Length: 364
Image (cartoon, rainbow, N blue to C red; front, side, top):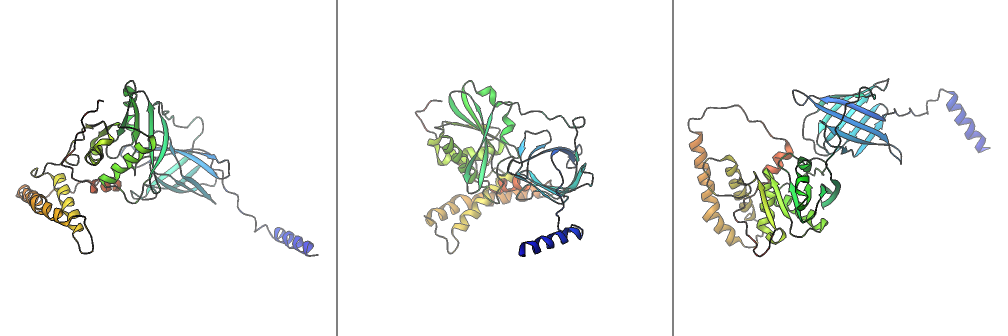
């Protein structure tokens, strides 16, 4: 009797208009494309969405004809579509006919790196789909955990000989070496690392100091079981080279600085008027003063005080005097262009390296 009553109630609900039936989710499978107004010429974005085997959706993202970028998740609720990836987050509303999604793009995920940008994605047909260049560089890709919830994209171009690890400049990924790395494989086994905060690597809230980034590289070397590789760094990667070389010279066979031997890689105090030099000197002073605050327990406060008196305070004083000299009579200029937030995090983590020891008795 109870079963009959339940069936009658269910039938009555359906007869009343089917209000209990959920609205079917729209079909988002396909190729979607649009242009971000981030530059005068725009940045092309393509998202390819396919059904996942376990239900739901999976996707691949292409930014400005880039190599394929995995998408963390595609969330669909009613007409709302949300796409989450390391490069950013997109949220929009699908049109009634399913031909377009109108929404906004925010660079960086989970940490936003820009203001929302309008982006309308159009469903592409075989006739209208943009032609995307394939990733033709002969590498394999893997992801290596280097810190809690931090995975780095690591490329392997193969080759024979001593291992060589390529580190990209500020704002770049390991794919910047896609054309260059294969030229090295006749003599080396070549790898590339995309540092945290960029490309397909994880973007954590913290961990952008020079030594932490150097530790990330060491964690990759450990995971790959690389013995005394040659590290090759471009631009800002000079700080990672010097971090490893100054602390663990026995771990590497050589350091190659590609336009990377700047103050953040090897610091010569009191370079007059250099703004980057002032930043490094002041940051170093702040770090040492923090170690002397009440409640902290430095391993040897006497050495810190001696360094402050002999080097840090005189260096900062010289840097400030140089700044005063340069500002004398200077006219007010327009504000400089601010770098991307993750770039700022990396630059804020610059450290001072004054000694890179050399290990003897090993050939390359």
